[in-house]
Length: 251
Image (cartoon, rainbow, N blue to C red; front, top):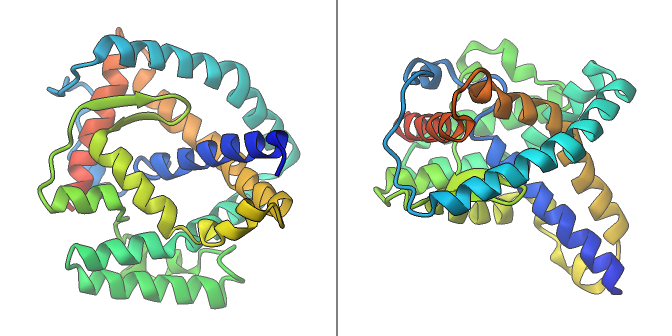
């Protein structure tokens, strides 16, 4: 594989982690989690490298404003909302293994069963997951999301230092390591041979790019929410992220 292809793939794989990270603060979060959050609270956070994190925060702001937002606006103009919603539903349904495995790892076997029901209902009756039929089934509507970072929290593994990563945004050491687990549980990444040999890399890259770009509008709205009217946007985003993740672990 030539250097140009390798560079493109590495860039897109980095971007693909963005929706994984942002899943932790979805556009329509679980009501139970929202109730436990206080948008005005300043949460005590272990942030030993705050100066570095602030530099990364400013870098990301510039990247989001001058690169990702224009891409997002162009995409929403070209692709109608129903199509974007269907594509988002498809990729969310595809991430079923992340939620299912982490339910099992946390001992939440009934919830794992409901996740399985959701997957079958949405895959079979929802045309491969493009239509979220489970939203019309009361028992399946509000099944909380699970990921590897939450599993570590349930196992009482500490969050570690707060981190702001280039492109990926806010996180902690625990959630960043968890995102690696989520990456390998995502069926989109189950065929690394294609990337290694160069065979089929165009299709792999195209699918990954579609996932990322389709998620951008909701991701950016979620990112902007705590920053609106904040005196210190860095503190606001940090507090919102930690509150949300703490509440998610307690579900």
